[in-house]
Image 1 (cartoon, one colour):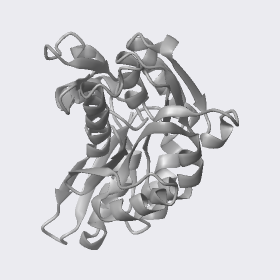
Image 2: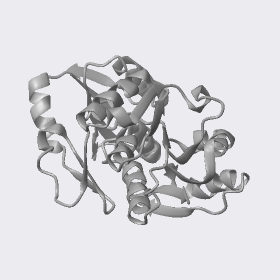
Image 3: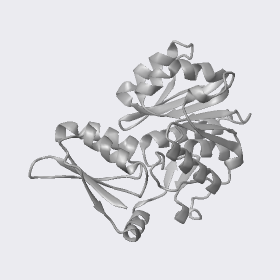
Image 4: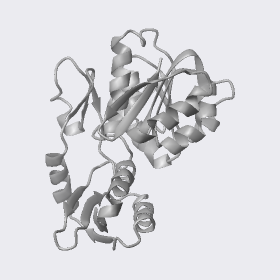
Length: 281
């Protein structure tokens, strides 16, 4: 286990938060230094092949940040992490729990058990919670009664795909990060839905040419969502449902416009702070 720490100038604060949200799903600590008005950001990384890549990404994005790394006793960290991690209720249907609280969930909710690791998706980030809220709303409105086949693009921890599988749907989860796929496989098994979920490393172009889906969810960045709009729209079955997030609220109109070109019409937009989710169907 290692502790990472770097400095963020006030002018770079928003960019740093977006960077961390996508790359440090296990959470971080931030504190403002009165001496120079800069932020100190601290987070912990488990022994993991992506630790070196993450260090390189931080150094490249914030070259003046003075990144430092220090070893931490894994046992001490494990106990501290358990104290920090809390269950998350997303919308009216789902609750996300770590394994050590798996039997402590609220009654009447669908419980998703996620082991906090490097893969994005513990439910604490607003984009994940927004997507789960959309999925829950679709379920409560009866739109998932037909058990549409789904695609979860950028599956990360597998949290969205697992949520759909727990509601009885079957589908595919893709991620360009093989380690994320390994995490998703562990989480799918822990939730008892491995038989309803096919996971693979790759992007949308690795699917069979004729593959289509009644529901597509993608919690990635606005840039990739726009770049992939033609491919995603082509994979959506007639009358299908689409939920997109990883989008800043100020970027939502641009993403909606990209998909309007393919006849999807205007989406319903949900906002949580500075983040948004767009849903069609």
